[in-house]
Amino acid sequence: MCVGSKSSCSKEELAYHHGFGNHFESEAYPGALPQGRNNPRIVPLGLYTEQLSGTAFTAPRNENRRTWLYRAQPSVSGTSNSFYACGGSDGTVSSSLPEIFGGADWSTDMKLDPNPMRWGAIPLQPGKRVNFIQGVHTLLGSGDATCKSGIGIYVYAFNTNMSGSASGGEDLHMYNSDGDFLIVPQQEALWIQTEIGRLTVAPGEICVIPRGIVFTVNILNPENTAEDGSFARGYMLEIFRGHFILPELGPIGSNGLANSRDFLHPTAHYESEDSQANKSCIIVNKFGQHLFQRSNPHSPYNVVAWHGNYLPYKYDLGRFCAVNSVTYDHPDPSIYTVLTAKGDENGTALADFVIFPPRVMATDQNTFR
Image 1 (tube, one colour):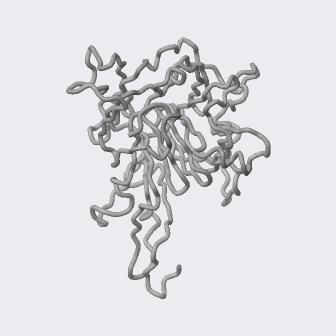
Image 2 (cartoon, rainbow, N blue to C red):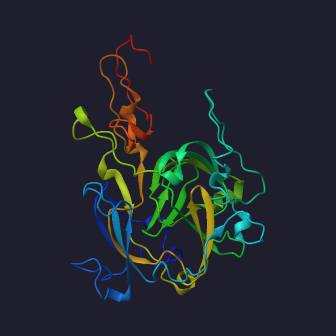
C-alpha cells in the first residue's frame, strides 16, 4: 500500500480490497485503527471518530451499510461557512458551476416522449476548459430525488481536473446527497479520490460512489488531453433510492455473472503533507438535483483509518462470466445483469446495469442471432 500524498507515489501502486458487500478495515498509518471498539474516548493518534451511515440504523443486518471513519480533522471543522447556490453572478466558483446538476431542471425541461430516441457522442467546445461537474449533461430521468424515488441518466465530457479548477485555484470536491452514482468511462481513464481512498477507473471498468461520500474526479493521464485536445467522456446512472446489489443467481447456481471477489474497494489514504492537508478547498453538494457550494479550510481527504461496508468500489467488466443458451433461442437480457437496484415490486428492479460482452453464441442454426 502506498502511504502519503498523491504526489509521493505513482498511480500504479494502488492496492484494493476484494469482495462485494464485505466488511473491510484499512489504515494508512500503522496503529491508527482502534481495536475492540468503534468509538473509544481516546482515539489512537488523536484522531476524530465519525460514522457514515448508508442505511437506517435499524435496517436488517444483511442490508445495513455503514463505515467508521477516523479523521485527522472532523468533517464539521470550519463548516461555519454556509452552503450557497451555485450558478450565481458573484464571480466566485459558484458562477462557473451550473445551478442544476446536469443542466436540466426536471420540473420544466423534462417531458414525456413516446418516441424511441438515441444520442450521439457529446462534443466538447474547442478551447474551453470544462471539469467533471461542468461536463455532466442530463439525458433521461424519472421520479424525484427529493422523494427518494427514481433514477437519473447522464453523460459527461470534460478536459480539466477538478483539482485546482476553482476560480481561486482551489481544489474542487463533491458529494451527492441524492443517490448513488454508477460511472462508466468510455474515453480516457479516470483518477477518482474519495474519503475512503483512491481508485483508477479505465474504459472497460465501472465505478460506484455511494451517497454522501466526498469525491474528486480527475483525468488519470491529463497530458494526453493536453497534447491532442482529447477529453474524458462517459456515462452515469444515478439511483435515488437504496444501493446497487448483485442480482440473485437462482437456478444458475453459486457462480457466474459478476463474481463478488472481482469487485475492488480502495484502501485508506490521507493527505499527509501540510501543504495539502491544510489547503482550503471548495466542496460542492448535489441536493435535490441542485448544486450548492461552500469553502472548507482543509482537505476532506483526512481519513487515516476506517472499517465498514459502506464504500466506493470498481469492477472490471472483462471479468463478467456470461451465461447463455446452448440449445435454442436466447434467454432474456436480464442474464447479463452486472448490478441491480431493488424496486417497489418484488422481482422488478428500480434499475439494472446490463452489458453484452464478447461471448460464444452456441445456439442451434435456426435461432435468430
